[in-house]
Length: 231
Ligand code: NAP
Image (cartoon, rainbow, N blue to C red; front, side):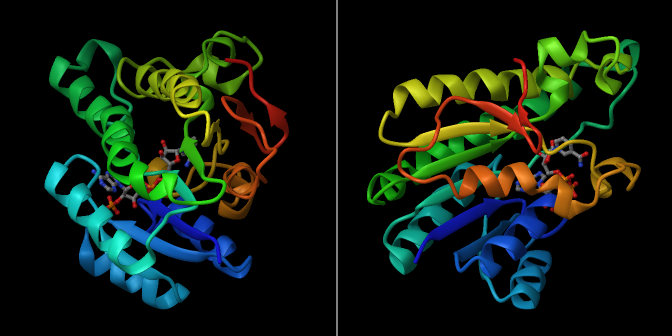
């Protein structure tokens, strides 16, 4: 059975990805920083729960040890946990605001991937999916016809641009693992006070597609539910 761990899976896109992959027969770990919310989600879905705060070394190490003891290996890691930082006005954004968003969205992926690397290396054809955003694309955020070009921010967009670069670097560093970034698209979740126009099912299409790629699947790519996204 395919063992899959999803960070930030107690709600939103992470929870929907857990639901869909369970339906596809994956053995899913719902990872969440809040044990109460995580246990509730895992219980409702029929998944396993592990406490994991992507900003905390001890929490991530303990989660990797727990999954290693229970599952032995990890086939699919979905780095989904993320924060918007409030999409503050640029002139009001402080260095600390930017650092906080980078700490979760970028350093969190580095920390979680490092801790789970030994488990991924024990899997037959391991996969990492990094949940990025069109807001992290230089091409999309400067294309006048794209919604993302009308938004300006010093924290979230730079963090997701870093996730994209991290993805191509991880793909080169780990040739035995297929590592891809995905843009869910603007999806109604707590992240945007449910203003996104896509359903969570639509928002998880790219995540699910990349979680299910076979051993000959791509690596170092950036896609949304319609196909490749320009960097
Ligand atoms: P969401 O509903 O706000 O869920 C975010 C999840 O991340 C929650 O489970 C949250 O946990 C978790 N999280 C935040 N900080 C964490 C930490 N330090 N450790 C562990 N978990 C943490 O947002 P979403 O829309 O599902 O977003 C999921 C991902 O998709 C994010 O990376 C986001 O940037 C990306 N994305 C979303 C959209 C969109 O339109 N929704 C578009 C493009 C990209 P708590 O419940 O404890 O806060």
